[in-house]
Structures are given as C-alpha cells and as structure tokens.
Amino acid sequence: MSDAYDYFRAHAIAAVRKARALPPGRTKQKQRTVARVYHLLSREAALAPNVHHLNDFRAARRLERQIGR
Image (cartoon, rainbow, N blue to C red; front, side, top):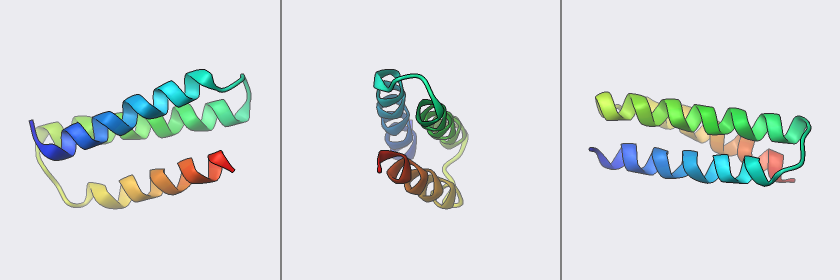
C-alpha cells in the first residue's frame, strides 16, 4: 500500500462518519458525495500512485470546508 492510499482512505472514513452524524438533508448528501470522492481517490491510488489525484483531493477538501460553514 502506498501512503497516498492510506491518506485518502483516512479522509474517506472521516467523511463517512461526519455524514452519518448529520441530519437528513442537502448537507448530508454533499458530505456523502465528498466521502465517495475520497473513496474513489483511495482506490485509484491503490492501483498506481499518481500526482494528478491531488487536484481532485483539493477540490473535495474545498467542498468539505464549504459544507462545514
């Protein structure tokens, strides 16, 4: 396993836990989408390390910060 896989996987798990704690609604749907993005990034990073995933990761982090507001 690569470090990127572990990093993305940890973010995916944290995002899922955060989504489960939210009440039903639009915010929960957005948080679940963020968790899915992290999960997909971790799966891709497990196959082959790639620097191009960082842009997708940063976009997901920005969206997650916007949800928290």
